[in-house]
Length: 276
Image 1 (cartoon, helix red, strand yellow):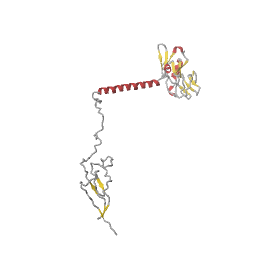
Image 2 (cartoon, rainbow, N blue to C red; image 1 turned 30 degrees about the horizontal axis):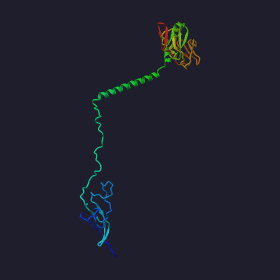
Image 3 (tube, helix red, strand yellow; image 1 turned 180 degrees about the horizontal axis):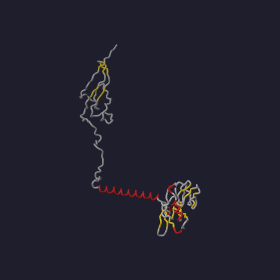
């Protein structure tokens, strides 16, 4: 039975080996079709380079001494070349090309006064706009012209005889004006007002004893009482039976408070009453 012995040898050919006209060294049993290892400077080219020593790889062969494995041979180039260590195909830039805007830049020290002026002007304009907006908003919430016209009412007192009532309209509400007699005044002030439901003296309800001014709205449910009626000779509300005396104070019935006295004043020159 035949036996084979594997022998591994490494052969280094001298640079002076014979080469073919194409520049490839001539050596038997060498595979010239094997590509060289990856080169970062190859740029994807698959052909041979003249500035790098080629590397050739051979396959196993049968010799008289036995089976021989692959043999790697490195042959120097046949011409004098200069080896490149970096790629010079692209221009290297240390920094991107940024335009120079220094000519357009201003000096902050020289423009500080202008900046202060612009900021101050903007503040003044903003304050004026805010004031105008607030004023317009408040004016829109104010009373209309017809309401302001009825804000105050003047009444000629010389036309009201003694012992009589006059009803006028003020801000949509009736107002009772009574020219009281001396007996009515004495009756209103002789009563024990401290025991009333809503204690209030007659002196606190009138500015002049002979003139009684009050709103004609019942303090129970807002009805309009009838004058010169009731158990106390004053006003009577027929809706729920509230009785008021000659001073407009609640004396009987469900009314919890006295008739309200509005704000008014007398004009001494022409004897007029101004309500409001």
